Amino acid sequence: MSNALFENMKALPEKVLPLMQHSKQTIWNHPETGYREWDTQAFLLSEMEKLGYRDFVKAGDIPGFYADVDTGLPGPTLVLMGEMDSIINSSHPNCDKETGAAHACGHHCQSSALLGVAACLKEEGALAGLCGKIRLMFVPAEELLELGYREELRKKGIIEFYGGKVELIRRGFFDDADLCLLIHTGIGKGTYGLSTGSNGCMVKEIAYKGKASHAGGSPDKGINALYAANLGITAVNALRETFRDEDHIRFHPIVTSKPGAVNVIPDYVTLETYVRGASLKAILDANRRINRALAASAAAIGAEVTITDRTGYSPVENDENMYALVHEVMTGIVGKENIKEDGWDKGCTDMGDISCIFPTINPHCSGAQGIGHGADYFITDDHSALVLPAQYFLCMAAELLGNGGEKAKFILEHKHTLYNSIPEYLEAVRAINRDIDGVVYTETGAELHF
Image (cartoon, rainbow, N blue to C red; front, side, top):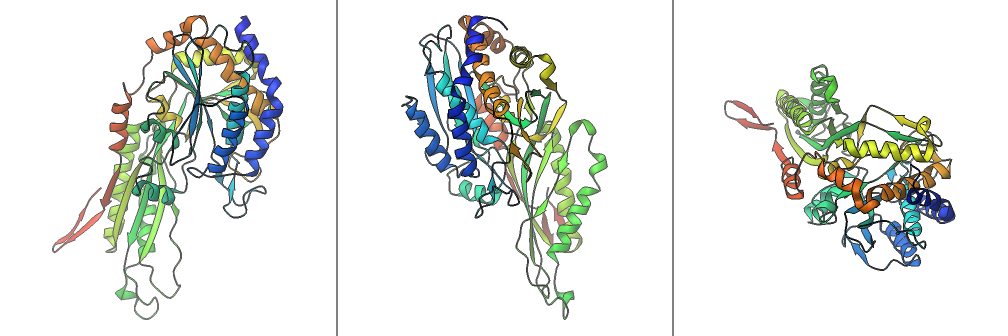
């Protein structure tokens, strides 16, 4: 990579590093979880307005917005994204003491790097040689947490999907998009990381219902919902050896209901979990067996169980031509020796849903130390966490939208996405949503539904 447009874009982020550092620290100090990022959005909108941006498209009743940069020449629309939400880790020393929210995920750097890109694109001559549009999109709710809160939003009709990008797809934010990019903040210094793809997931809530009674005086008159839940977890654990290694299935439940009194047989216990996997088919196949085990465990002791399945995130299917271009661009920025090519990522991201429709890739940059989502996660290298992602975005824009959009057009002509259109994709992910009464008791026994 030695053309003048690429080199110009590569040089710009250093000029706006103070802006990105100020943004990084401001957002770090005010962490907000998904669909609650109102202060973060207000700050970013204010900073964008200072840069001269005016025409924002906002999601409205949830956080999320974008601004388009039009080159004035016809061509593809390239979407560059930065995430705004935090995780919850109440043990992090810099968490919000009331909510437990903490940016132990690096999203504050993503949004700050994208703000830096916005500043760079206002530099004189920055758009020379480019065609099409660059969409700068700040997105909510990548971390798939606080599922009860998101289900409340869904029931109120505010959202349909738990994930921010999936919800913005539904709201039309990507209707005229062609290619999409995002880069996650990772561990290390001076490097980029590439994976072959990553798991997707579906979201589950499992509610076991029993019958309360005195735990000492009349336990025979009760039905222990906690025991039913324990049986359910044990039954699924017995299935683990049947999951194929290449499907990367993960099941990791937590108990979310409030504890009762020790002298009362617990009559209601809820579990929350994901079912992760490398393909939608693998996830659904594993989920059917998991539901069977959960329902059978309830029936074993006469309890009831309600299983709520919700759309999570699709697996990331990296576009092979985009992957090749990203590798070339990253080599031009940090050198081949500083690119780490990893295998399959077992984590999940709603970039998987983007990859179902658009050519994309889900890479990482360095900049942090500690364990991702851990209490020891801190940004220790601003150049890696802010300058490298901004350089990546700008240099990818130079390659994709330069020379009349030649490389973008090649990628679009040879794309192999899982779905051909947004409506087709939405129909598929909506089909995941189910509410199941796992056991129906009859005069002659019990019927299992899974």
